[in-house]
Image 1 (cartoon, helix red, strand yellow):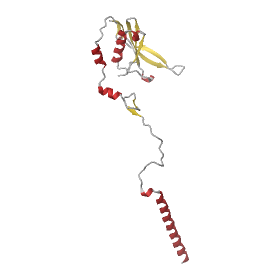
Image 2 (spheres, one colour; image 1 turned 135 degrees about the vertical axis):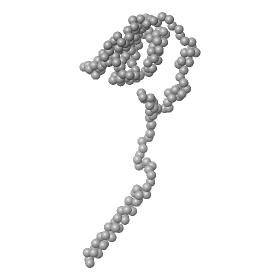
Image 3 (cartoon, one colour; image 1 turned 90 degrees about the vertical axis):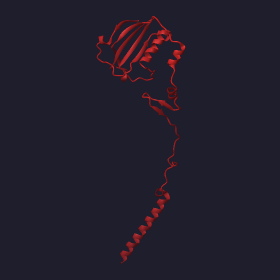
Image 4 (tube, one colour; image 1 turned 60 degrees about the vertical axis):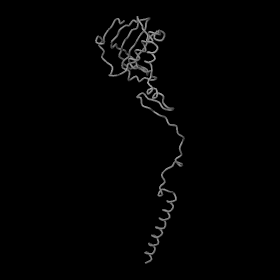
Amino acid sequence: VLTEVNPACLFSANSAPSYQNKPLIVFQGDAFETDTKLEGLKNFFLDMFAHKAMDKINLGGLEHVIVLTAEGSKVAFRHYSISFKKSGGRVPRVELEELGPSFNMELRREREASADIKRAACRVPKQVKAQSKLKKNYERNALGETMGRIHMQKQSLDEFQTRKVKALKRGRDKVVEAERAKEEAKRAKRMDDSDEE
């Protein structure tokens, strides 16, 4: 049952979040971990916003936050915009402005799905499962691209196999040097002969 419903049009928020920007979702209260009803509600909201657990968060990408606070069987839903202000330290000062909608929920009746239906809903297709099982040294980045790491031994350029061209052989250099020396000797002899005449 929803109580104290305030639609978004009642709030004068100056900064609305960007299109398709996912919100940060905060669940306050131990009841979200201990109570099965609230655990189901938590899963519902995480599925609704298609959320994944992240190890690192870029502060520049955070624009809005949804806060769900549990007190007994009542849950308060609040939606805030986030703005970062300069502070004296390295971590910025965070200011929240209520965006709306906001409402309170009270969980009265609950009907859990049968085990078969629950299992069918949580089933992952084989194709997706095969994609998620990556080979060794493969990982996916935040954009969903597959990245691989290759481990190679140190290579010596002396032993590196290249295309062998006859003109580039070392023995060829000696032959060319010898031919040049003969040419120069002939020139020198001609010069000497011309000087004698």
